[in-house]
Amino acid sequence: MKLHSLIFFGFFASGVASSSVFAQQFDVTKVQADPTTFIFDDGKHTVQQYIYEQLETKSKCCGNDAIYLEVKIDPSGTVLTAKSLTGKNDCYKSSVVDIVRGIKWNPASIKTTKAVYFELKPLIACKGNPDDNTYTPIPLPSGTVPTAQNDNTANNQAIKEAEDRARIEAEKMRIAAEQRAREEQRAREEAAKKNEKKTPPPTTTTPTTTTTTSNTTKNTQANNKKGNTNTDSLALPNPKYVSTGDKKPDESHIKTTLNTSGPRFDNPQYSGGEQAMMIYVKSSLRKAGICGLAQTLTELTLDASGAVVNYRIFRANTDEVRTVLPGVVQGMKFTPSTRFKRSFLLEFKTDIDCTGKGFDTDAFNNAPRYFNTGQAENSQYNYTPEGSGDH
Figure 1 (cartoon, rainbow, N blue to C red):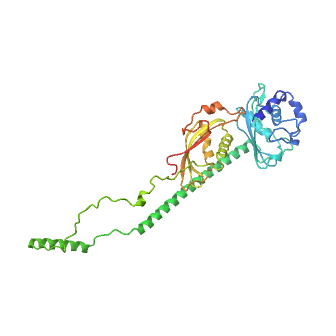
Figure 2: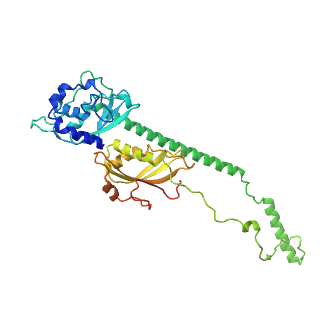
Figure 3: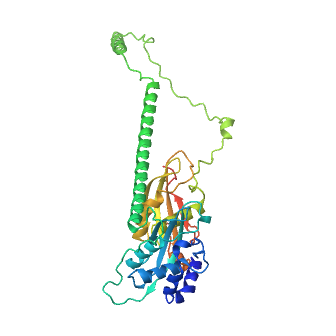
């Protein structure tokens, strides 16, 4: 990011003044741009230079703006999509997308679809005309092969398709979770039925026994009235309790260890490690247009495979972060650790640099934690089991 800014400031002072000469000597259809240095292979011109010249000569945009541009390139060096992540002037934001899709990139270092990012700071004086800052589509240069997604409408369609896929995946996860819950309930019911079959029926008193007991009691009372005291055959035993004194416990019980360690549930581990989680979260937020400080406290529920099956967002520092967070957490994958579902709290605090000015240390350090665990305050991620750890 800093390298891109240095490149811009190096040519900006003279780029506008020589735009007519630039247009006469430069044919964008005959050169390729380096996706790392943003310099065309003629060794004289840069991508930013070309965009500024096209804005001045082929658009009605004016004023100043700062735009952070995302460009996705396929292995042949052709632009698949382009999107303005920041910027306030809609004329500039739409026009630079039109211009950049006509650039051919050097495919030598591109093995799969590659996303590149760079900053533009156009500055064109307004002429006071009624159509100043009126967006007019800029066509592709002659000889350029159009791509399947070569305008803002296609970009918006790609974004919509990605959002639809995310919603479909979330619905699949919800249905799978409900199916697992139903299967577990059926298994519990079947186990309960098996236990009922194994339990012997309770002993009941039969009418014959009741009748005999009643008759015996009547006979005993009659004999007592007659003076017959020979009732030994009918008397019920009534032994008295006699203490046998204190007894020493068996040796095996004396040596039994009482204090033993129970099961312990550690924090869930992200697949690929904490560094992979940091890269995934920051890149996902940046792709969604989040810049600056992002901080949230979220409860995640994992299944036995480590996939996120449910979530609750407790806090977020901005509405934008809260809006894009569901799509981020549903794509997270943790290492399987137990055969039970488990819920835990995950707090992350990070600074996303979209301007090229570097990491805002003060803003990051001055933002207090939402959930205090006693860990170092400058740690970007904190996740702690909730309650006993497993549910």
